[in-house]
Length: 237
Image (tube, rainbow, N blue to C red):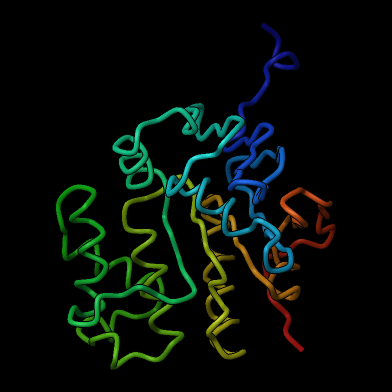
């Protein structure tokens, strides 16, 4: 078969995906594709379906209708146990609220993610913290870290198992401007390393850093924009 006839499979594909709660269509026949190595932002007003979409992509929920293909696997058809394994092996999650264990150090929080995946490795966990610039804060508890430092621990934790996709839900929502720049710059470096990034954000300046922005409205994909000047660098006013 000639290479011009070879069709590359998207890393993630949603085909007519709906999530229905009674009369409410939280998602309504949404279709989209994300290629390996892409950096995609998802925007939309409250109630537009962003969180529902993230929960489905992140294997934390299943659609009412449609297909969700992640690396060729239709996760819409998988059991809850299999979804847990897929999430563990293929997805790194970053949340606005951090969700760090308060009595564990930064290093131990990263190692805990290893524990659920394979075997904790302190050296590897320390390297992940070094990657986000926190090696000198490894022995500190979350209460001893700033909000920006806690979010960088979350990035290290999401990276530790080498996921196929990083899903970030409002990752800069609780950060000041300086720490927002640091976290977005981390995303830029991850993208340069080939990591696939899907970032939900209300901040148009954060969305503009991505290669492509998808806008949801009333559970549907309203439109998308391509960033013609994509560099991965954030420029905040």
